[in-house]
Image (cartoon, rainbow, N blue to C red; front, side, top):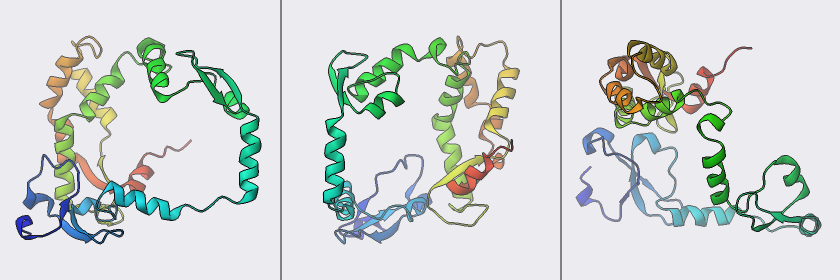
Length: 235
């Protein structure tokens, strides 16, 4: 479709930097709120229903139901039992319910304080599942540009269709037939002269040219439901 000839159409904001227009083959659909036509790639055709965030938010307002008087009374009673205490990071006053205090060992006034607390007290050696930097290398490789290109090539080869249930588009994921954890273990064994913590930058550079990571024959397109089934482990 020639995008210059289509009026009142906006391209959905997705990362298609690795694809050419002929490769992602956009489809035209209509916004359920404003009726405006816009384009989406096949992978999102069952997900995108609105042309923009304002239209999506308007849709959410239509789903809200007014609170009943009984619910308002319950909320009032719950608020009356709330306790004022200090944020465990910055010391500012914060109001929380007794049940919230029971569930959480630490209390924070905002997500900013929580994030700062985690970055100081729950990283590296202080984290309960710290494995000497192995997870960091794992994440860096999975988030790399090469990994995104690998997923894109698999989606394109499989025509955005789940290889188990044949669903087209929607929430699809690229599945490793030979698990990525095994590939990473073999990679670290081959380059065992480097440390996953001290030489992580070197290992990331080597991973770019490590062919088993990017072999599309080792991947297939699955919808999220089918992909989750592959992650279930028998007790």
